[in-house]
Image 1 (cartoon, rainbow, N blue to C red):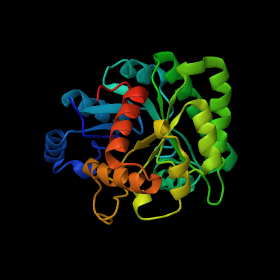
Image 2 (image 1 turned 30 degrees about the vertical axis):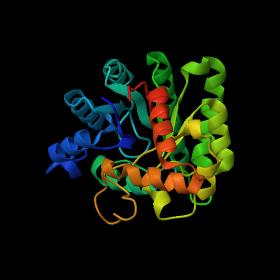
Image 3 (image 1 turned 135 degrees about the vertical axis):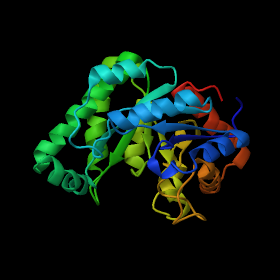
Image 4 (image 1 turned 60 degrees about the horizontal axis):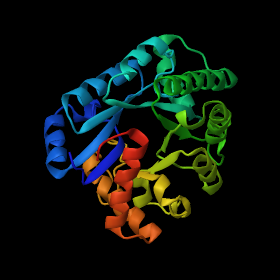
Length: 281
């Protein structure tokens, strides 16, 4: 189908859509809006794939988030099997999360008997990430990266880039992907650009100026738009459940920040999504 917009990162299989998911999906299709619904563990990836298979304007990413399910090990064989599906367009979301990890860990500790050790946790996240980098290269699909640094640092991105830069030397152009919900600075952005990785921005840019400079810095061919629905609704919808329909608010803000014509940027974002994820837009 011909898309007007494409939301490259959402969670349409999330339970927050259970009451009206069909309505949301119908409105998206009527508007010409496609999306990638993103898995965060084995169960959620299965749900994402089922949803993508059922709707021609929905695709999915499958993988294990670094912090959402700290008890789950990465099942390489399972993810390799489902990654063969044509509706799977990325591996992830995967990466490093040093911002909320203690909160996530405490949530699961009581019911699963887990104990907290920062060094061991960093090692766990590295192991999970390296496995998913390996899988992405093996199945020749891009990575959907999750990076959330500790406050006041770029540590999660630095650890991620250390692995990716070494892997790039080994695998070349087979290693590719997108850093979703990008919150890095211009130096981190430069390193992703040098690797050939795109970066996507969410509705956060509509209500804070913290990322204005990096939105302007990234080349037009290396930037994408997302919502991360149902989370983090943009202005003027803050406080409501987010929707892929609101990705146009992100595009509009990008257009203003970059001083680029809206229609020119809209088309370029579709072209970028097609190049990175292999989606016919």
